[in-house]
Image (cartoon, rainbow, N blue to C red; front, side, top):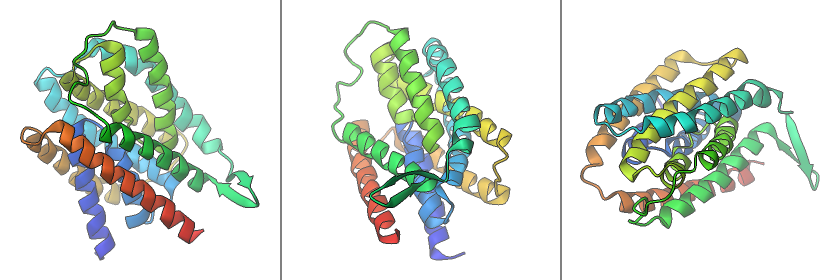
Length: 266
């Protein structure tokens, strides 16, 4: 096993840590790990990410179910539209994306680069939100708006289907602002939703005959789940707001790395 693979499995642990402590954001780390440390094509990496994040999230969701930190009513209103959206994208949209999406000034933007560009945009937005998070998030009581929650769920499901990310970092504020769920329950509910959406998206991949290296898959999964349980333990001792800001800066740095790396390659 070379140094890149060792770093890759450490990255798998990091993916679980993030899910366990923040309830989302793990896929934003897993896809760069899969692409740059294990040399998996971005399109295929999104399939791995969906399945890995799904299985990792369910282990974390189980802990939150036991602690009664899941709002099932909000999960239902959010889950149905997002499940439909992510399945449609993975089953029909992703397999039919052309090899070259478009050409800009004579420069071809292929499918894999397009996915990485979309991921970088989302990473920057997620980093901005995390860096500018504050302690009062979720404290203000707001009226429940199931229509806005469902609409947001469709958008996140589409994004999740495209880049293979669970969307947990977007689900949490959606549940807080539109379903009036407190922050702890929003994190717990988001883990359950990430798990369900990821499995449905991965089912769409299987119907599209995506080839998975199962021995590698289960090895990566083992390290990710280990990270989730460590993350649950550490969450009791680390201030959530400070953790978000630190992870936000790390995600921003990773986004810059992807841009620099792709420019140097291409």
